[in-house]
Image (cartoon, rainbow, N blue to C red; front, side):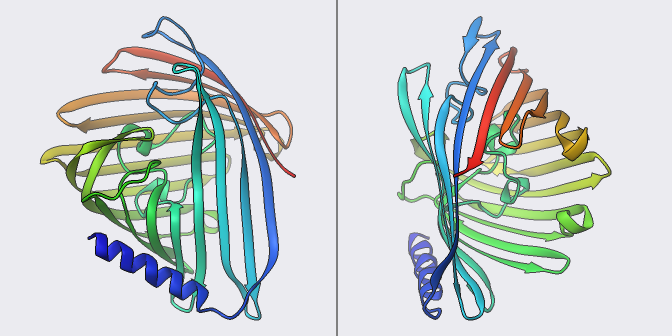
Length: 327
């Protein structure tokens, strides 16, 4: 499978650079900063993160987000993305570099190709950007990945899209040692135009357990399928996902639902509630939560979050002040 991954990346690279000579036409550079503090009943004190000690998001950090597009005679032909943070880990008392986007994307006659660190083709996380949010979807509960290293293909249609990816299955970290992950997702509906999107996903491979950037030695076989839906109506947003399969020959199930209601002009105020259920490695966990998001200005957002974990019986709250603006 490592040969397949290398071949896919080589094909993607050759397709991108086989295009006619391009020139830079547009670039966007954003500055990002966040302050996070909260309380954990399990730790019986203040915390300076939104998740557990092993989670990457969210922590006090500064960073940037760069997007650069290239065009030729026929229009846009390629883009580069690079999103990076320096986060302070208050538990370990150290600065932690965090790399999110690090990709090269190119347009071909048959579709778009990417290589680097980007989204896999599975579930809501294949298109839902939550990198600045306190409440998180299923990848933060051990089902899927927010980003992964490898390559992928996507094709947009008038009423949906199709995506494939071959990646390492290591998430934020990078390692190739008998590990691989294949994923595919097809969807119907364009959320921005039709106000709904329904997706069917599959992923399978041999992947390690990960804890943030730490990659464990053991490789586990996974084969999981999933259905996801996003639906907007007036000021109400709903997202749901169900996955079922096996991980290391054990049943793996996840259920996710998020309800968001927008208020005020330009949807400056949002109230959200969500529920996540996971059954993996023989352990069942219920995680209900909720939060409030208020955009103080165009560039500055205040978020709050509450979450309860049934396994650890932990009640966790967090407050975040988040800045994101163009330079």
